[in-house]
Image (cartoon, rainbow, N blue to C red):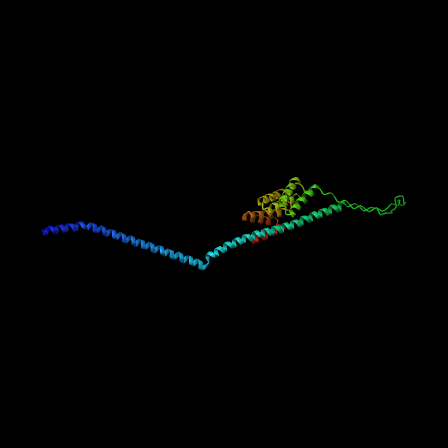
Length: 272
């Protein structure tokens, strides 16, 4: 009986071995999973600490603030350039108005001088027969009549008055009509130039470029061509095409180096 009991106990021990082995394997797996989780948590904490340190470093060195300041400076430079362009344009317009008004005044004075009549004979002068003319009451000498202003001049002056009053749409319409009606007029190139300037003043930069290019094509020998090229360059710059604007300024300087427009083009290239 004792031997049988021993064999029963031995068999029970053998049956329990796989369960113990499985239990051991589960414990080992859990230990490895816990170790892996601990390592991941440690890595995460390390990354968080490094990120915090990096952010602190950036803040301490002010790099983020420097980037913001740099963007603000770029914006301010762009704004100042725009103001310079506007001021330059206004100066150009003032000079053009002065030149045009001087030309108009000089032209009218010349017409008045050429229309003046010759002086009349002095009162009491002897007649061809030698006798004195009959006494007549003195009559005041009539002043020479001013020459009539042509419709062409009236149309030009009316459009120019609109521009000087700041009524740019009306001025543009007037100069466009003038250029179409009087293409052979001595004032046609000037009217075309004023048309482009009126469009520029309305921020119609593409229209200004088109009008000034028409001037250059139709009146290549006009003294207004350098001014037209300068307006084209300004319009290209306002449209954000800095490369085209620079090329136009360089072409202006090359073709018309002694013009006032070329001097202004050099100034603009120096600040860009």
